[in-house]
Length: 83
Image (cartoon, rainbow, N blue to C red):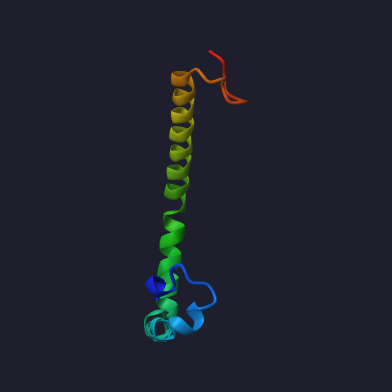
C-alpha cells in the first residue's frame, strides 16, 4: 500500500484500493491486542535509548556546524562560546 500511495494524495483512495484492503485485512488478522501491548512495551522499554541517541546526534550536529563555521571563517552562531 505504501508503495502505491507514495506521491499520491486524493487519488490514493481509488488507485490503491486493492492494496489498502489487503493491508487492512492483514492488520485485522495480525494486529491483536496482545501484539499492540507487546509493541507498546517495546516502545517504552527503548524510550530512554532513543532519547539518548537524539541527544548524541544533536551534539554531533552542533559540533560539526561549529567546525564548519571555524573552517570557513564564518562568525559563530548566536549562543556559541567564543574561544
